[in-house]
Length: 317
Image (cartoon, rainbow, N blue to C red):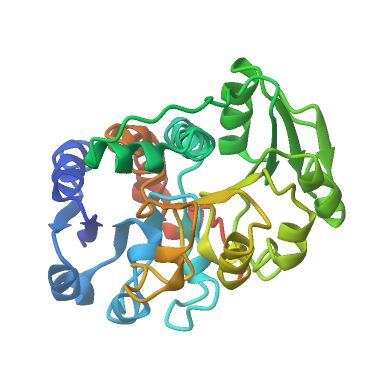
């Protein structure tokens, strides 16, 4: 019996690219592109496999897939599935790792430089045709502390050290990492951030990391330091962050992820001083499709030959 594989992505070109590339490689599988949630719901009753952005697979969609055998997420984070009662426990969930480092690191550095050089103020001055100059802080000699030392953090550490920065890390999973001069355990997070000029959050969201960056962390940071969160919104206590920015406890922040997405129009984060908002785009590079495809092909090969039980699940619930 032919298995139905749904490709669901918010960018239709990704879905088209994958259907076109995978169909000749796996003729026994029926690949279908879903360009909207309505189309995905229409295909759902016959779906055996869904490939797409994990956080964009809501419980209602998963519940509408009684024949679901396997989920292939094109992201690293799988936290949205942790407490999804609609997802049968026997369904494996695989992810893509080791490919998002360049684009996430580039956005992190962009936010760091935009914050310390006061790029928003320059853009506002341009709108007003106002000429004003100030000294531009440089990255060499600055300290970057990274919370979470996975593959993305390794890329960021490489980029930052190449630019002359000193990099430290916070992790309970490893005691050393390339281009990282010192690794603190999570229990010493406050000590780690005290010396940081930039604090970048790259840790996965879990019960242990929810609001791991809280008021105590902001109190420990230097008043000249900046926070950048490109992990998950839940890792940072956004209310405490807004308070820290309003009181000048830290110098500024760049957020790409939020506890609620899209960020509500009335959320105080929008108007917090010295805060740059980007709409969860860190991993969305123009090369992301090509980056993820080899992992998808590898897992589809396993699935086609041995079934879903042979797929290694990346999430223990």
